[in-house]
Length: 249
Image (cartoon, rainbow, N blue to C red; front, side, top):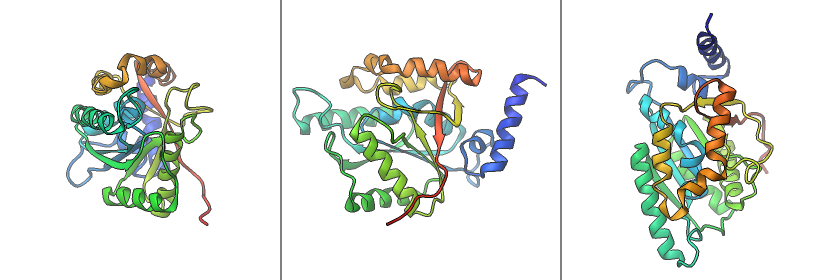
């Protein structure tokens, strides 16, 4: 049996063991029709986070025929030095819209402020409702062990929404600049993005105000190569699947 056949068989066996809405199951599914189309949702802290963290995977999902929605927790208000929050938000919102066009994804701006993100009951209810309205089968968000507060808040809001919505969709975490922002990231799942790597890059490069080369220099290009080597393909993105029980107070 070839390595590729072994990998395909492993994916199919894994998919069967962990549920129909798992990442392996969606990747190994047959042709997508209106009857078996799934909803993929990604919650990121800022414009450019979903694109750089899992843009290749979102493109793979959309290319397969699934619906994709990107939720931006903030609009990047503090992301352009020397520019007012209102002007920066307008610039970064348009960049995100253009990136979503590249990825053929729906976009939603949740309305929090870059650098001043909030985790409280009011915002949990707001974000939970946004997610509930999208009816995800699978969701991606930041790994919570992250140096950036906005990334952490986005992740916690996603986790608590997942719990309160009955854990009825699969939740996966992506990495961001591992070693600088994400820490102790040990993947459970990989996605081959060899065929969508350039599409991801084009989406990231829509974020002109954020100096796209510096985004890749932060480690994303290295990670695509390294995770690809781990998976045995040219380029890959890696994820951690959410498991276990969380208390609700």
